Image (cartoon, rainbow, N blue to C red; front, top):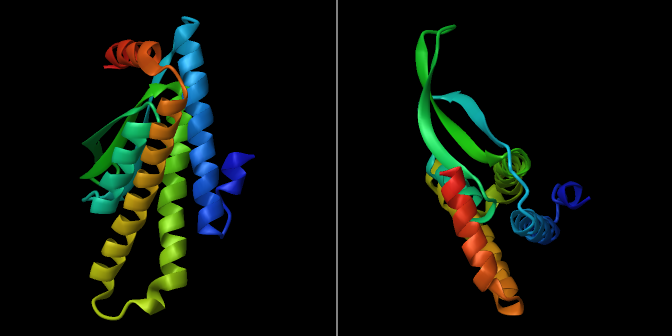
Length: 174
């Protein structure tokens, strides 16, 4: 339900839904670690058939790695069909976390495009420069909201044991 709410045209409603989804993901991830659930790790490749990964896409990857319990590797993939090498985004983590991180990647990328289409008339000048600046500003806002939410949860709970569990889980994933 939260991921469906994240498709809302209202940017505040969409951001709130993403924050809540992240909180639930964190809660169940920690619960699984505490109960000793053995995670099956998986990987996923996002191949956009581009020669370059944009700055805003790198910021999306940073958000995913910091808040969604996945590791992100930017690499290259050779496509023998067109005899070319393309830049790709690879995600590693538990199957559930990778699936949610993939959804969030596409959500953020689509949301950026949608919001730019609705607001580009407000920005005169070099379109590409303004667009990149707009994207990075929105992503900084998402990062800041997720960071504030994480700090708030940290203050509300005893995270000393949870922190040790996350470090152990991170080492297994690495």
